[in-house]
Length: 537
Image (cartoon, helix red, strand yellow):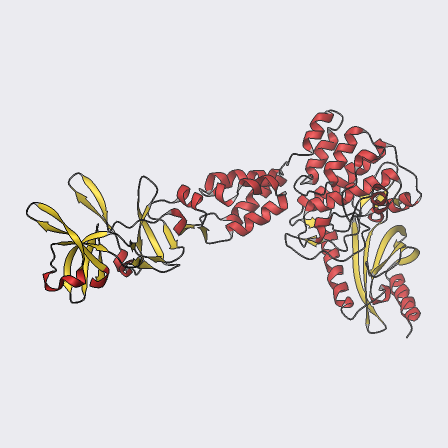
């Protein structure tokens, strides 16, 4: 059976179900995998017009082995989305049918309201600049309202991801957004579907992170293209712009206020774009009353959506580590979606691990759990050549010598007697090597160390890297006393001496030598939807 025969069977089955194909509006290609037709639908004696989107391997071009599976996935998602939509600037969902022809080819048919209007690509292809700003603002208002609906008013956010002139219809007084073939449902990070949207989306749309402001930017670029009667890529070329850089709206023939509005809508910096369609609609509504100075200021001001503003307020109250978990540079530079992603990752943890000494000092409290950062090898003691000390004990060819408060075992050959302790104090001696004094050498002698410098670590106090501990005392100069797990030699205690208290052994740890562990008590998955549900009310 040929492809033509299969198509005749498609028309026959559609006819049996009340449809008569009248005019092909778009052809299937490697991007859409579908054909769109204007069709008459007969219900009893009533005939109405409908738009039919027919997707099948019959309508695919440049197919691969995986395309049929991808086609089913795209169709199922588009039908799911269309059933949810209910907005005057989005064609109404009417019906979905699936059937098989030739015993092996599946046919999917999505029926929506037919709009008697031309798409904006047709207008741009005429090459005439649209200078009627009343008409332009009406398109902005209708499509932004539709985007607000899909982004914020459904049970799950829908991102269109394929906004371009050919997917927007316009009459004299009404604009419509359609074609949700490549849309995304819900919050997730996915690779941007490789489709030819002619440069209307910004560069960050291809980073793997899909956010609402990318749809807004693409729509803003559609309006810019309409105002010039040229595709956005052609405008970029004329302006010498590289890649997907934002168009310089100052070079276009638009009113100053509309220029500033569209500049914020299409800026390359996602943090400075309108974060929601609702924000853009609010400014569009008040465009005439806003001064140019206020609009100019908005270009460099990040304005949060209502939901995330509410979320930040609640987190600031409930999270004692809020300033650490949301550093100032993140708060001031991340767009809403990036910030939500950061917060979701942060509060998904069971505990927070703080390493920066500044924040450890600020947040550490008695009873906190800590982890040793790097191995603590006990007291580091050093004996330098030329130091003097007192003989404590003789050990054959060695001696225990107390140098200041530290006792070292040293070879007699490295010692020189310089004084002798007597009833009247210390008596200087002619410098004599201790090894030459033989049996005359006693514990009364003061000696000088003449050997090589030596460093020792007192091993009783070794704390390996990563050892868990508990903070039980914090000194006035922010040094910490810590009881270390399974390290009995370093288990400290506070002792009372007269009216004062002191810690034994007196080993302290600086903030830079530990990681602070704080339990996460924030239920983000409960807090987040509560804030954004309030936003929809």
